[in-house]
Length: 107
Image 1 (cartoon, helix red, strand yellow):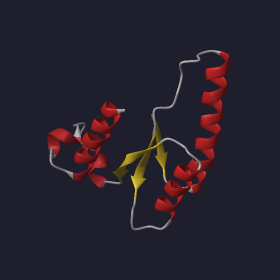
Image 2: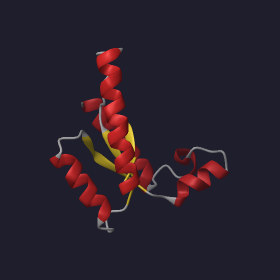
Image 3: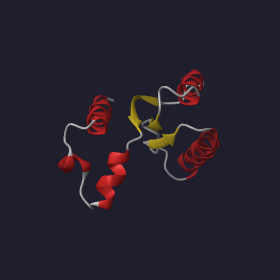
Image 4: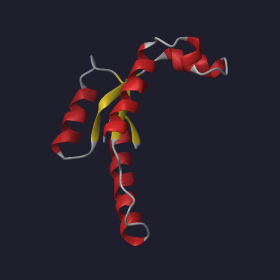
């Protein structure tokens, strides 16, 4: 699984990484594959992130359906050295991570 911040720089890095995974797969480990690309720090109201994901799907890249939003709560949990699930088990980002887990389990 590859996390993907929805911006142009991350897109270029993603292509480089995918090329490297392909090379490693061919040369060293034929079972190596990308299970999916998960949109991280996703902001649906901004024009670029949905556009980038549409382009990735058009290119047949394995973008996962689940998208992870940006959340200040994650940073706060890091600051408190406490997993967010223990701070706020019903937070939106926790639900998104659960959805990601279920999506990965079903693939």
